[in-house]
Length: 250
Image 1 (cartoon, rainbow, N blue to C red):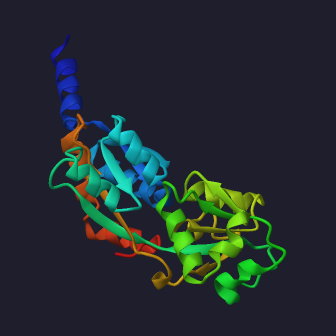
Image 2 (cartoon, rainbow, N blue to C red):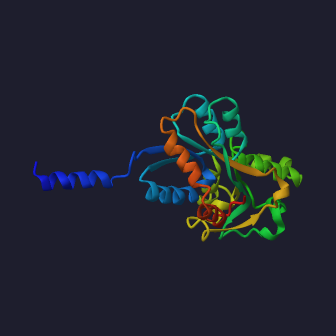
């Protein structure tokens, strides 16, 4: 090998990101758009890569308890990562509340429903199906039930409920016409993929318990440094602003 070639190879190696790794992230479905943007920014700044998997927080919690090989867990319910921390399944000191979620009632643009009536509009006889995330394991589903109970509507409407595995699937039910209305995350309603397709009523936050959301590095992770760096990245002012623009509160 010539000196010139050897020198060029050495320069190439030195320019590679040090200890570049791929981390695997389990994330609540309401983050489907915002977290992709955050991960892209993190990858550009660090050279690490982020593999994102979206679903319901409760399902991920069960999978992690049973040894699922994730590095970071983003939950729409802060209690799930807190429970992992208490059980020794989360890396101490990495729990971080990154946002508070908001829930809306969403309909397609072609719907005749008058959303200025608030949740009472769901009593309209034209409504046959109402989409929510499964409250057994999805925090947004529990928030939807709480909001309906607050307005004394749940018992009147429970037989019309169609359950999505997570908040993203509930949104798909309404978007596709499989449901006439649905409870979805505000972050999904304002995302580019959906904001031109429908209208929404933002449910008052005192109708349901706060959707405090948190993330944590998992104790089973073999890439704790890169995983912790990703959690720290969320604390940057520009990321907080990105989450705010995505309609997450703090």
